Image: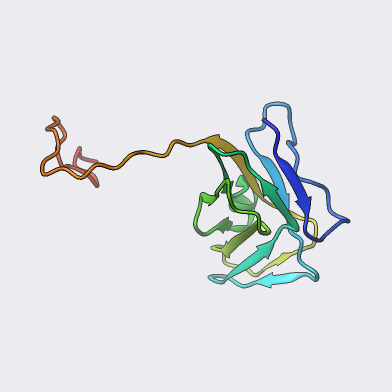
Length: 145
């Protein structure tokens, strides 16, 4: 699968890429103009400087980076975020600081990862009743601890 990537700005930053041979996602870079301070409990919309033409039948999922989460409490709201195949605007991520100290986000920092996956559009059919299962409507801890 080929995905066309366009630089919207930030020509000095690397294009997204897989950091290892077995990586599932490409890393996205923070295209902030200046350092951005994200205080504990606060969130910010961070540009990546790129747009993508994702093929029909696919989506891009935007996910947090585990190292930022573990070391600093930095993660993403709306996670995983979805980039639809017909979206052509700049990819941006909503970063939140769940840590106890302010975080200084720097230009060019790897801030998120993008995973491409196939999707199917379902035909939704209204019915009066659903088929029965052993589980039924049980949810939210219905099987115990």
